[in-house]
Length: 299
Image 1 (cartoon, rainbow, N blue to C red):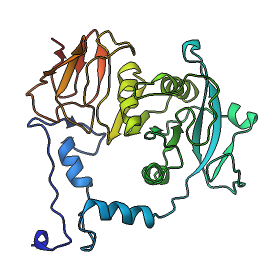
Image 2 (tube, rainbow, N blue to C red):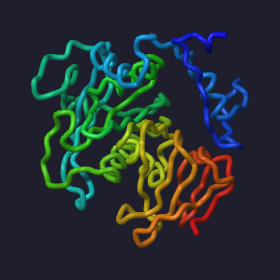
Image 3 (cartoon, one colour):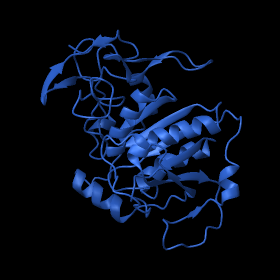
């Protein structure tokens, strides 16, 4: 009956006919990704005056609620000489009286050398590595809105800012693009070395989602990734970061992927051929592996 109300939206979920199976830790029973999404999605009750997406976007932009996430920043130097330069990583920390610094985003200060060297340990706290969208940064409201419940639940988190973003300095001519995995891979490896017992997760928005799914196939340290609002990502047939390769949708996106060869893109179907089939991305000698589906070779 509620679906007939003018401000109550009807939610639909589109997925593959044989969806991804999930096996959570006990005592939770096995489930599927669509079932988890349905159970986790609250009812959508809209203001009847905000009857289209444009008005909803304007309302959100003009009435944004402040989300007080506090950060400590460390500027990393790239370890790979092919991608020389520096980039800023903001680590979520407990609230503190951060001094106002016009050269940094709000509620952000630099780690001291002693504080930075003290990072690490043998705890098993889950940790999420977050990537923002194009020209964004750790200060973005959408990013802080995702971090807030995770941090409240006891998660650790850090945000990898793209070079020149979030008021960070550009120190070389090497910037970033939708396949610029080098800085993120360095941070994931660094986190793994500092906290060897932590499960590492990734969240990427828009362009950051493009980067994240490529990081996931190149770096097995990330236990799982969640991508939001990404159009597509590039990966090459030989597993490298050079050239145009297959475009594959990742977790949270569609399941039809295409193979690039000589600049020509051709559709290839995975396990049933309908949207929504893909999940985790692993690259092993030209084989795309999806949980819940048999490995499919690119042809």
